[in-house]
Structure formats: C-alpha cells, structure tokens
Length: 367
Ligand SMILES: Nc1ncnc2c1ncn2[C@@H]1O[C@H](COP(=O)(O)OP(=O)(O)O)[C@@H](O)[C@H]1O
Ligand SMILES: [Mg+2]
Image (cartoon, rainbow, N blue to C red; front, side, top):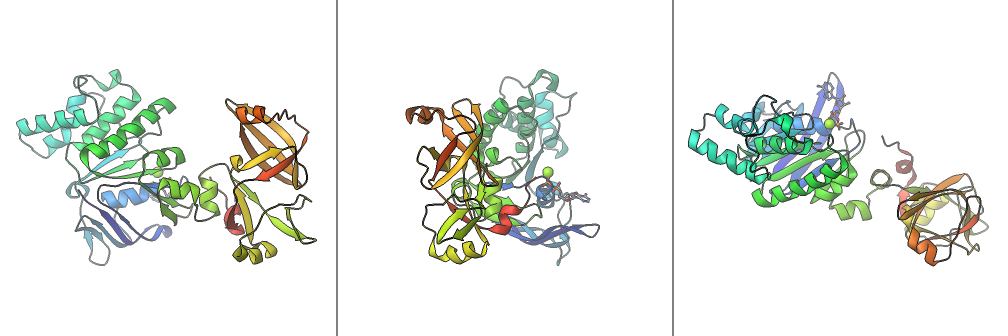
C-alpha cells in the first residue's frame, strides 16, 4: 500500500486561491480524515490527489511516485495512480447488476476473465455483499448501493482509497453501520484510506488521525480523534467539534468575573494566560457537561432560561449577564442531587474543566 505526501500544494480557480501551500503526509495504511466546514476545499484536495485536477503549485507523491508536480510539469492521469475513488453521488450504474458494476473497471483494464471474476467476487466479499451479486441497484438499499461503489473502487486493488462524504446521503442508522464497515475494510485490506467530510461524528468514529481545516482551507490541527476533541489546538477547532461555551473574563476588585456580570469565576488561571485575560485577548472555553448547576450561589451564578429534555440528558440555557451558556446534565445526576430546577431559577455554576483560547478564534464563524 502507499503513503500520500503533499508538498506545498496549491490550487487556484480563476484567480481565487482555494488551497494554499498545503503540506501533509498520510502514512501508509492509515485511515486519515480531512474534516472541515462546507466549501473549505476538501473535495478539491481529493480531486488533486486523484488526478482529476492539476495542481497550481507544489507536488503530490503516492508512495514513492511523483504523481503531480507543478515545477516538473508532471501530471499522471487518475487511471495510473492506483487509487480507488468513492464520491457522495458516485451512483452505481442502474442498468447493471452488482456483479456487472463491480467487474466493470477490470473489463476496461482488459484483465483476463478468470482473474476478473475472481477479483470481483473478492471485492464483493470485502464489502459483505456476497449472495447479492445478481441484484439490480433498484433492489438495494442506499447503504448497499454505496457498498457496491466501494467494491467497484476496491476491485482494481488500489493502494489508496479516496472517499468523499460517501455516507452523507444515508440515514443515521445506515451511516453508523457503514462507518463500521469502512473501519473493517481498512483492517481487512490494509489500504490507505483518505476520507473527507464535514461531519464531526463520522470523522471521530472512523479515523486514526484527523486534519481539521478552517473555512479558508488551512489546517488548524492534526491529531487522533481523542487529541482533537480533548485538546483542541485553538478556539476554532474547539467550536467546530461540538457545542461550546466561550467565556470572556474581566478583573474587577481583584476578582475574575464572567463577561459583564458580577459572577465570579472561582478558578486558578494558568500564569501564562493572566496577561491575555487582563487584556481581553484570552477567553476560557468549556463544554456543556463541564459546567455543573448547584444550589451553592457563593461564586458564579446565572438565571435558568430554558430546560429541554433530550432523552437521558437535560439541556439548559443559562444567562450569565449578557452571555448565554449551554449546560448539559445527566437526568439521573440531576435527580440524585435533588435538583428540581425550573425556568427562571437562579442557580450556582461550578466549572469542572476550562480550556484557554485566543479571542479571535472564538469569534470566527463556523458554517
Ligand atoms: N471547478 C471549480 N471552479 C471554480 N471554483 C471551484 C471549483 N471547484 C471548487 N471550487 C471552489 O473551491 C472551494 C472549495 O470547494 P470544495 O473543495 O468543493 O469544498 P468542500 O470542502 O465543501 O468539499 C469553493 O469555494 C468552491 O466554490
Ligand atoms: Mg465536498
């Protein structure tokens, strides 16, 4: 199989710089995801690697092979890159059976019949579609059709699979099932998988590593799902990965208050963050379950604006001065603490875990 390496890759469309000087290495056999908001350039990166588009600058290697190079004026066509591609809307051919769909690339490559048949059966097995070879696409669910597309990409024995949001047209249950299939596929075949999506949940579930892209196509962080979620590199990543609270802080009478309120944040600030907090450049961030509502009103307090029951979770909106915090609590925990809260109540707030971010990142819009 093969690693993928991008060296200073850029792509310009009609004077508009979409990808700027992107360098990244995706190790052999890894399931690697580009995660970013819609329009940030994920599909463009994939099309550059696949060879459907020429680079405007930089070089791309697949394994040891230089497949795209602006300075050396090299551009290998897709069929010579040993890649398999599955797009969101990469429909299977409706008039061909599962078997005919999957064998098609081998017929194009003029692979002898016996070998082509064997490889087709193998690819169909790899996506758990054995027994359905003779079905027509209209007899398949959306998830099964997507598996046919996967098998058709696998049948050429690619070194690299490029998957562009292949699950986004599926409903939630199927999506979950297919996530598992993709992870299994990588284990079975050892193929390097490059996946692009705007869906945080899918990215966290299937990837060994994730590169988070911002709306301008710059990579903000590369890390394991755990690192991305628990140790976001900046406020953008933090906000993009889930429901987030940003707390601007100010010092008044030697106390650190939340926003423009009198609520005191009863916490140590890391010494290196104090200057930033004083000047307003640094804000604190926390997830909804890192705030606990209490009856203790001696430090931070807020007014409960809304309670929503989300199955086993209580979802609160709490006003602290002009800020609105998102707080979530297990319904069991709320009951065991005897918290019978109602909209309009004044509540105490205890912060379990705080992260510190530069203010500019917290303000950046995420689409
Ligand atoms: N063929 C093209 N011509 C001009 N602009 C394009 C072309 N393909 C993509 N773009 C632009 O590049 C940016 C990134 O697009 P894309 O990679 O499709 O985003 P996404 O991250 O949603 O996949 C968008 O602003 C899009 O309009
Ligand atoms: Mg796209």
